[in-house]
Image (tube, rainbow, N blue to C red; front, side):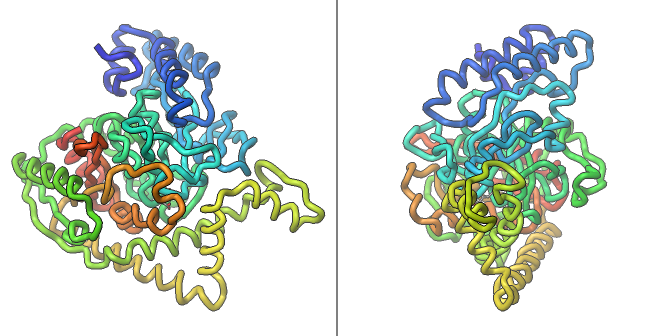
Length: 475
Ligand code: GLN
């Protein structure tokens, strides 16, 4: 028998409804696990022990009155770059060490208003910048499968917390892979919706034209369930679409026979693609074929420019978004002899290296004289990358690729080589640039015991196809 904290959302929801256990018991099981494991793994920056148990009590009341929603009474965790009312939200940067938002991000509000139980806030790369969770000012997150390895990033704390059963699921943010890549490294499911599907209101902005928010769960079914609750138009985010939200959880278990699935050849020609990762991905392709999918090779010719485009556009938008972090409007204020000095010392002590690097790159790329050469050119190539996807989705329903070219690497292994870390995003950044939905599903382990994720990418607003195919992969 599973311990309560090991349950999926589906299992926990059924157990609560049938009164096999209470939300207080379920929440306590997660809190006990956090207490036993967080010192080592460092997945949580803030744990809301008291308020979580209070929220669980309220949820038990709702369940008793027959007023439970699908997420009522289920304990969840939230990436610390997402605002949670009355709960400290640092984005893993010391400049926000004392920041307590007075409001919930829209997606979090949707969960909490139906009685979701907030366990705490997850460690991440500061402001979402990174692919290893080593850019956190609260220390790195360790991979629960091998404590000497990174958990991935930027949502490493969320992926590790789900993988280690410290929570039932987590809500995280994905600009250029931050949900999918750590999910792959930690052996769980991570779903990035289409840009505009879920409200970004209350998500600390990074690359605003790429930012999305989505679930990290133990199963694909659970991701569908959470998506159904958090998706939809929001008057507080003008980029959200009006399209009705499909019943993802009803569709996810449907048949995939006859679906056309493309293998983008550029992803498999990549230098540095780990052989074990390739093999595991190929096994999943064979599995889809067996289930009656039509598999064909396709080409996304501009894939090779994705990293260059991403690392111009995102730092540019980052540099503008981070302008508000000045020690005056938010967070920790350092002393200074004048205003400039106050800004400078607040930022110097409140931001880690990578945040400073992004501000510098972005400010440079946006400056007069360089704007046309960098930002404008990157936007032009971005359109070509998007067109590549639109063209292949005329022929196929979804694409299958590895999530990451390699499994989790060692802590400190790439820390001093930012370019090597940027390259870790090579499989996840193209869909982000194009605004497409993408899922990472755990599909096995390497001989050394490290999890490997496989990615399914779908057409814009084609979340159902992605979830349905992902559901059939190994998990
Ligand atoms: N590795 C990416 C970056 O550093 C991930 C960002 C994200 O999705 N938040 O920009």
